[in-house]
Structures are given as C-alpha cells and as structure tokens.
Length: 171
Length: 147
Image (tube, rainbow over all chains, first blue to last red; front, side):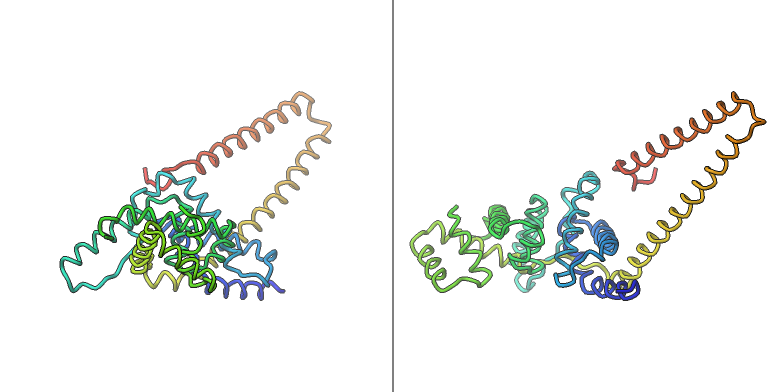
C-alpha cells in the first residue's frame, strides 16, 4: 500500500472513530481539553505504527489500547491538574413537568455524577463504556484486555456504589 | 455476593440469557429476597444512567478534528526529517574539522589537547543542561500555569 493510500485509509478510520475516541478518553480523564489532546496524540501514535495494524481486525479495538495507555500516562503525569471533583463532563436529561419530582431528580443525578467521578479510573472506564457508550461485555473485555467475568463484576460493583449513594431516593 | 447471580443478572441486562439460564435466574429471584432487592436496585441505577450521557463538545471541534490531527502528523514527520538531516550534516562537519585539526602538523600538541578538552567539556555541559531541562519539563506538573 502506498503512503497516499495509507493516509486515505487512516483518515477514514479517524473520521469514523474520532467521536468514540474522544468520549472514551473523556470517560477516563473527566476533562474536555485533556480528552481531546489524548485522543489526537493516540491517533498520531497509531498512524506511526499503522503499518503493523492487522487490517482484518477491528481498528478501534487496536487503537483503544494506545488511547488507554495515553490516558493513564496523562493521569500519572497530571494528578494535580485533573480535579478529583470535576464532573461537568456528564449531563442528564429528564422531563420537567413536576417541580418536586424535578428537584428530587436533580439531586439523584448530581449525586450519581459525583459517585461516577469518585470511582476508581478503571471502574469508571468500564461503567462508561458499557452504560454510556453501549459496548458489549465482550468488546470491553477485548479493549481493556481483561476477562469478561471481571468486566461484569466491575460494572456490578460500580452500579452498587452508585445505588448506595442514591439509595434513599431509590426506595 | 453470589457470583453466579451476578453473571446471570448482567447477562439478563444484555439480553443474552439462554432459556436454561433464564429459568435459573428467575428461580433465584423467586426464592431469595436479598437477591431480588439487589436486582431491583441495579435496575433503578441502570434507569438513572440511561438518562445520562457524556457531554458533547461544540460542533466546530469535529469539523477541525482531522485537520488538527493531520497537522500534528505532518509536523511530526517534518521534525524527524529535519533532525535526521541535521545529525548527518553535523556529524560530517565534525569529522572534517577533527580530521583537519589532527592532521595539522603546525599546531603544537598542548594546543591540540587544550582544544580537545574544551570541546569535550562544552559538549558534556550542553548534554547535561539539555537533559536537565527536558527531564524537568516532562515532570513539571505546573508547566501549563503561566508564571
């Protein structure tokens, strides 16, 4: 494959996967600018080793490993810059017809946002990949290189922590 | 927590239970109130999560995404080419200078030794300062803050 063809193919992969890449990084890093930087620099690294990519495999699964390492390095190097309480990367929507219900809902979602942000990085990553991004257990297992049972268990315990936090509203 | 129940519950959420597993899961729910309550809690949290999403950046971000990335790739390649070129040229020039300096019979030995020591010292100092700067920069957590 010529350099031009390779560039065209890579561009196609980027355009198909840039949103998924950005949102995956956002779930891990909880910061828009860092997520943008991480997803782009992971694409640069992916381009450099694009020649070694097995075209029969899924591009995003291959790319995700690079992205994940990038994000974990950013967290390691920028612990003070990634604020522990930053949770404006999450949004919620609900019907606004009942005022009392509305206040209660707001409380539930704010507590849930806080609890998601307080989860361990890998627990939050798994939860977001499954519940927000809609990946199957099998896909997550492949992307994160952990057994499916571990994926299920991490999601379950993450939800359990949230349930504990918003428990009073769930009954 | 019953590990088997956990797996069945997650499979139930993903709608991938086999007929036998479905019966097993329903039996567990029917006979164990603690597991039933656990399932209800997890279902409610899933409902809450289903109304949440990761917030979108502005639309323009996506329009410029590939171009920004392409510039980075292009500049990366350009820097590699410039660096390789510089290294080759500097190495050739250094070789020529040293070769001429050594073969010059008119220069006394102590001058040659002094010049070699000076060049070596400057080279080591340069590497040392460069390494310190690069190391400090990569580890500086506050480099984004304007002083």
